[in-house]
Structure formats: structure tokens, C-alpha cells
Amino acid sequence: MAERDPITGVETTGHVWDDTLQEFNNPLPRWWLWAFYGTVLFAIVYWTIYPSWPIGKSYLKGVGNTITYTTDAGKEVTTHWNTRALLRVEMESGEAAMAQKAQLKKVAAASYADIAKDAEMQAFVQSFGKGIFGDYCAGCHQTGGVGVIGDYPNLSDDAWLWGGDAVDIENSIKNGRMGTMPAHKGTLSDVEITDIANYVLSLSGESKAVDSASKGKALFEGKGACFACHTKEATGMKALGSANLADQIWTVADVKGLASAEAKLEAVKSVIADGIKREMPAWKTRLDDTQIKVLTAYISSFTAK
Amino acid sequence: MFKHESIETNTGLLIVLTLVAIGIGGLVEIVPLFYIDGTVEEVKTADGKDAVRPYTPLELRGRDIYIKEGCYNCHSQMIRPFRDEALRYGHYSLAAESQYDHPFQWGSKRTGPDLARVGGKYSNGWHVKHLVKPTAVVPTSIMPNYPWLLENKLSFGDIKERMLALKQVGVPYSFTQIEFDANVEKFGEKVAKTLDINKADENLMAQAKKMNTDGDAARITEMEALVAYLQVLGTMIDFKQHDEHEFIQFR
View 1: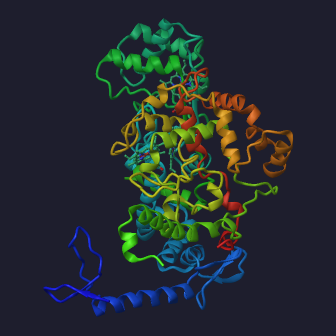
View 2 (view 1 turned 45 degrees about the vertical axis):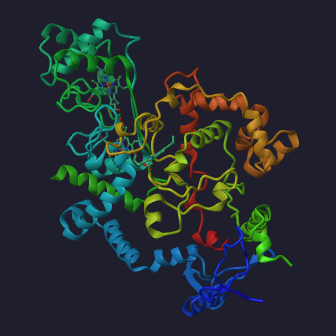
View 3 (view 1 turned 180 degrees about the vertical axis):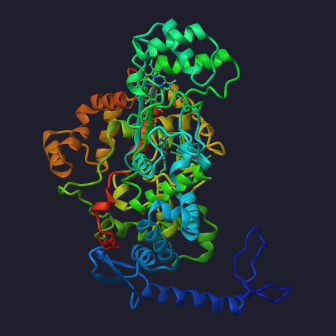
């Protein structure tokens, strides 16, 4: 009952819309048809080899397509194809992973002095360290570790709150740090805070108010009890992470960044009045010892240059 | 028998049959996952409790805000089992980790980084600065500013209803004593207390007070809820306690 278009003679589908509108029923090109059968065949092969159809509480696991990996306990296990096992195999025997592992092992066994001297290890620390520093640290300490004054300390200068030796830096990263200075606005008057601030500024040659500063010195070493954390010489204590106030390097109060003497005074006054609470998260659960070692070596290389 | 023509010329029938065809495709893919063993991994802590727990009331509100603000448009919460993702984000996500999420926040767009394991990565203070103005901490960021999170008071008058609704779809928040006891058994007492619907308001206020991200302990803002939520993401399972083998066996 196939109908044909009277002009071209081509078979039509037989449907008619709007009185006369009809549709040709050209056969599909051969190559297209075979390609279609090909995809059907491919699907069947694919179903057979890879995990596919569910049956009951399980599913077809794929025929002749297994993955063998080693457990943490050292046992060899063979399982059906799955992406988790695939990742495991790549992590334990993939080319890039093995190369990285070998480098990490070398760094783990070496001393910091050796890492700094050995060109190959140093190159690895620079590239791997840059990657993980970017992923985990740069959000706070910024690219290259330059920090954000007031919030996140600069790791690329020579001044350290908690110590710049490898063990200290490792400790900072592993366990995190909580930099805490109490607010003094309850215990000191505004005048007293001004005097102390002038004294602190005078230590790095930033204040010319000599009288006020000398009163401030007495308060610093006396009633203000600043010396308890910052020492009498105001050089800070690494056990408390109390900043060195006499080294012309600032981490909380933006003294260098401010132009006018009044603004500098205000910045230091507000630190003394309001106190400080800065938190460095602990990384020992997220990063392993070798990654922390690479980071320590990477950070140390900022200042070594 | 349907005739080709009668389907093509009858729109209503065409729509119904199209839906049936798509429905079969969808059901075949989705339904088996509900009864296949091991779709959701069983992950226990050292003392035999469930490692993954439902959100506390404050975290739950934080999740609502995450959805309301459309964070999922730029952030996924699904670390795939690839080496590059493992190196950047940490252990691949388990189905167990989103078992109490309705709807899950796996997402499919990464304009920003994956957030599945962002919990504990930054301090609360960093999150506040970052959400108010991302460029303050990441100068090149293209993430939008969300300053109102710090201004908007958190509305949580309906927190109990929200928890009850989730309970309806299987999240083990407890309402009766029997349910509470079951949670003690499943999660331990400390966690079970945070899942008690009757104590939802107190628990929410106490946790927000402890966070106090806006410096005003009496005020509870949307920021506190959102940061509480971000800080718990991906932190419930301690992967160092588990052999990778355990998780592979579930696949």
C-alpha cells in the first residue's frame, strides 16, 4: 500500500497534513544503517566486559576484565573492573605516581641541609612544594608566602613569630598556631596606650615623641606587663609567637604601609587596645609528614635566597 | 496497534508516550541503586559507631543557605577517583558522605574549586573575610561578594519542621526517646544529642555562639550557619583509619 509522490516517484510515509503536505520515505543510507547496527553490537560487547546490568542485589561484573591491587596489609586482591581499584593501581604503580613517590622518598630520608644542596631534590621541592603551597596555603599566605599584613604573616621575610628553624616551621604547619594577645583597653587608659605605642614605635625609629615614649617604656616594663610576653628587650618569644617589636618588621600593625605618623600611632594603639587573635589551622590530619617536610623546605627556600 | 500517524497527530498521546519512554530510561538507571548492596558504603569509627552523621541544626541551616545563594552553580562537592583530584582535593568522595544530603550537592560545574573536603582547611575568620569579599584574601578571585551573610540574621524558627521533613525521607533525626536511644547506639551519645529535634533551637544557638563569626555572640547570622556547614564538609571520615581496600570492595 506504499504511496508514491506523483512528481518524483519517491515512496511517501502515507501521512497527509493540511490536505496535501506529505513526507518522503527515503531509505536510510547503507553506511548509516551499518553504523547503527555497529553501535548496538558495541553496546552488547561493552555490557559483557564492563559492569552493567543490575540483577537482584548485585549486578553483572564484567567478563575477563579484572584488576589486581595490593591492600595496605600487603595482600594481593583481584576484583572486577571499577574506578576505585583503577585509581589504587595507578597510585601504586602508575609511571607518574612512581616517579613522584621516588622523589618523595628521597626527600623524606634526607636532611634539610642536603635538600637545600642537592639540585634535583631542590627542583622537586620547588615544583611539588609550589603545587601544595598553592592548594593549601596561598589562600592565606598568598603566592610566594608574602602574606597579608594584619591577617596572615609573611613567610618570605627573615622574621618569624614561632621560629624559623626547620623544626619550628614543621611544628607550625603540623599543629597549627594560635597567636593571641589580650586586649588592653580595659586595663590601660588611652593616654597610657598612647605612651606605650610611642615607645613601641620608637624601637624601630618610627616615633619622635620622646617624653611619651619614655613613659611608655616604664609602662611596657611595668604596669602594662608587655614584657611578660615580648621580653624586656621587646624582641618577642618564639614559644608564645609574640612578635619582635624591635626589628622594624611588622606583621599585625601596618606601620610600614601607613604614611603619616598619626596613622602609625593609631595602628599600634588599636593593636594594644583590642588585642590579637589569629589562627593558623593544623595540617597534620590533611597532609602527611613528607608533604609537610616538602612545604618546610619550600618555605625555607624563600628566605635562603 | 498504534498507528504511526495517530501518535504524530495527537499531541497529548505523544507527550504521554514520550514521558513513558524517558521514564523507563531513568528508572532503569536509578532504581537498582536503591537495592544493590554496597551502593552506600558502611564506614565505622574505631569504636564501632557510624562515622558519617546527619548535620547539626546550625550546619543544616548553613546548607540551606549554600543552596539559597546558589554556591553549587560554581562549586562541586564530588571528588572523583582520579589521581589529579586525589592530589589536589584529597580522598575521593564516598556515597556514604552524602547519604543524609537531600538533595545532594555533588554539582557538575567547577568555576571554583571542589568543596567536598574544604572543612578544616581554613579558619572561620578566613571564611568570613572570603565570603564578604573574596578578593580580600585571594586577589585574583572571581567569586562574588556575599556581604549580606554577615548582616542577615539567621531565621531558624522553623528548624524543627526542617528536621522533621528530612526525617520523613529517612535522615535519622530523633523525636521520641526510642529514636534518641537508637541514635546513641548508632552514633554515640555526643552526636545523638545534636540530632534531637526537641533540642534543635538550643543546640543551634549554642553552636552559633561558639562560632561567633561576627564578634557579637548574641546575634546569630547566616554567616555563622554557612561557615559551620563549610567547616564540616568532608571531615567526618578519618581516612587514615581505613585501608583503601575497604572502599574498593563496595564497588
